[in-house]
Length: 488
Ligand SMILES: *[C@@H]1O[C@H](CO)[C@@H](O)[C@H](O)[C@H]1NC(C)=O
Ligand SMILES: *[C@@H]1O[C@H](CO)[C@@H](O)[C@H](O)[C@H]1NC(C)=O
Ligand SMILES: *[C@@H]1O[C@H](CO)[C@@H](O)[C@H](O)[C@H]1NC(C)=O
Ligand SMILES: *[C@@H]1O[C@H](CO)[C@@H](O)[C@H](O)[C@H]1NC(C)=O
Ligand SMILES: *[C@@H]1O[C@H](CO)[C@@H](O)[C@H](O)[C@H]1NC(C)=O
Ligand SMILES: *[C@@H]1O[C@H](CO)[C@@H](O)[C@H](O)[C@H]1NC(C)=O
Ligand SMILES: *[C@@H]1O[C@H](CO)[C@@H](O)[C@H](O)[C@H]1NC(C)=O
Ligand SMILES: *[C@@H]1O[C@H](CO)[C@@H](O)[C@H](O)[C@H]1NC(C)=O
Ligand SMILES: *[C@@H]1O[C@H](CO)[C@@H](O)[C@H](O)[C@H]1NC(C)=O
Image (cartoon, rainbow, N blue to C red; front, side, top):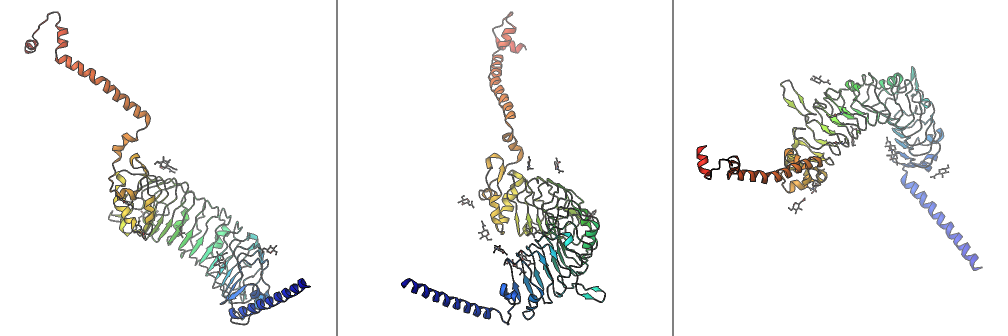
C-alpha cells in the first residue's frame, strides 16, 4: 500500500518535471529564434542569427527539398553540416546560403546541380570526404540553366576538395566558377598532373591561392601556372620534389610559397626560387634530405620578410651568402628579413654575414643546432643573444647549446653571454680535439724527448769537460785542457 503510494507519487512528480522541462524548452526555443521557424532542420540543428549549425549530429542523410524550403524565412547565410556520416549530397533549395560546410562527412556521391539554387554561395567546403573522380563532373558544380547553358557561380570564391580520393580532375570541373580565389586540392592522391587536370586548373584565371599539399607529386607540368597571373599563395608542401619545380618560373608574382616536407637535397644557385622578387614568406622546413644550400641559392628575394628554414636535420652546409645578390654596381644586397628561423638543423655556426640588418629582425630562432663554440660564434654570444633576448622568441637562446669544444660543451649561449666568455679559435683546439691514435703518437714523442734529453745533456756535459778529447788524445795525453784549447 505504502509502496504503491510512493510509486504513484513519484510517477506524478516525473510527469510534472517532464511538463516543466518541455515548457522551459519551449521558452528557450522562443527566446533563441527571432522568427517563427518550426522546420525539421531547426528542430535538429541549432538555428541562431542566420546560422544553421548541424555539426557532429550523427546525421546520415542531408535534408530533403521540403526541409530546406522550411528555412526560407530564416534566411540562413551559413550552414554547417560538418562531421556527419552523410554519404550522398542532394539538391538544396534556393536559400541565401553563403557558406556551406560539408567537410569530414562520408560523401561519396553528389547529385547533378546539387548547389545550383545557391546563387550566393561563396565558400564551399567538401574536404575530408570520399569523393572520387567519377563522383564529380561539371554538372555537379553547374549553376541554374540560363539562355546559353548553366550559369556561373559568380560569387564562389573558396572551394575545398582536400583530403578526398581524387586521382585526376574531371574535364571542365571548374568551368562555372570563374571567380574562384582559393582552391584546395591537398591530400588527394594525384601523383601526377595530367593534361585534363591541368586544363581544369587553368580555367581558374583569377586564382589567388592554390594548395597542392600532400598530393604525392614528384613533378609539376610546364604550363600549369602560366595563366594564373594573380596567383599569390602556393602550397606545394609534403610532396616528392627532389628539385625546385621549374614551373615556379611561371609564377613570378608569388607572395607566399610553401615547400615544406619535400625531398629537396640541395639548393644551388639559379633555381626558380632566385629572383622571386615579390616573395614575402618562404617555408623550407622539415626537408629530411636537404644537406647543402649554396651561395646565392635564395638570391634576389628583394621583398622576403619571413624565412623558415628549420627542422632540416641534415642541413649542414649553409653558405653565408645564400641570401646575397649583386646589383648593377656590384654591391651586395640582402633582403630585409623580419623573421628568420634556422632552428633544429645540423649547423655548427651562424655566420654574421647571413643577413645584413640583424637589428631589423623582429623574431628568430637558432636553437637546437650542434654549435661549435669557437671564435666564429663569438658574435652570437656578444650580439645575437642580447638581440634575441628582447624578441618574443627569447626563450630559444637557452636552447642554443654548445656541442664542441669540450670545455664549453653543454653550456648555452645565454650562459656564455652572462659569463662574458671569450671563445677560443679552432687552431688552439685542434690539439685537444685530436683522436686517441694521434694522442698516442704525441705521447710517444714526449716520452722520447723526456728520455733523450738527459742522455744528450750528459753527453754535452761530458764533452764540455773534455771527456771526448781525452778519449781521442788518450795516446798522447795532455793534462792541461786549457792549453789544448788554446792550441785549437
Ligand atoms: C549514430 O547513429 C547510428 C544509427 O543511425 C547509431 O548506430 C550510432 O550509435 C550513432 N552514433 C552516435 C555517436 O550517436
Ligand atoms: C562548423 O562547425 C565546426 C565544428 O563545430 C567548426 O569548427 C567550424 O568552424 C564551423 N564552420 C562554419 C563555417 O561555421
Ligand atoms: C568546416 O568545418 C571544419 C570542422 O570540421 C573546419 O575545420 C573548417 O574550417 C570549416 N570550413 C570552413 C570553410 O569554415
Ligand atoms: C609556413 O609554416 C608556418 C608554420 O609552420 C605556417 O604558419 C605558415 O602559414 C606557412 N606559410 C606558408 C606560406 O604556407
Ligand atoms: C653537400 O656538400 C658536401 C660537401 O661539400 C658533399 O660531400 C655532398 O655530396 C653534398 N650533398 C649534396 C646532396 O649535394
Ligand atoms: C636573376 O636575375 C639576375 C640578374 O637580373 C640574372 O642574371 C639571373 O639569371 C636571374 N636568375 C634566374 C634564376 O632567373
Ligand atoms: C651533421 O654534421 C656533421 C659535421 O658537422 C656530420 O658529421 C654529420 O653526419 C651531420 N649529421 C647529419 C644527420 O647529417
Ligand atoms: C622574454 O620576453 C618576455 C616578453 O616578451 C619577457 O617578459 C621576459 O622577461 C623575457 N625573458 C628574458 C630572459 O629576457
Ligand atoms: C648570470 O650569472 C649570475 C652570476 O654571475 C647569476 O646569478 C645569474 O643567475 C645568471 N643569469 C642567468 C640568466 O644565467
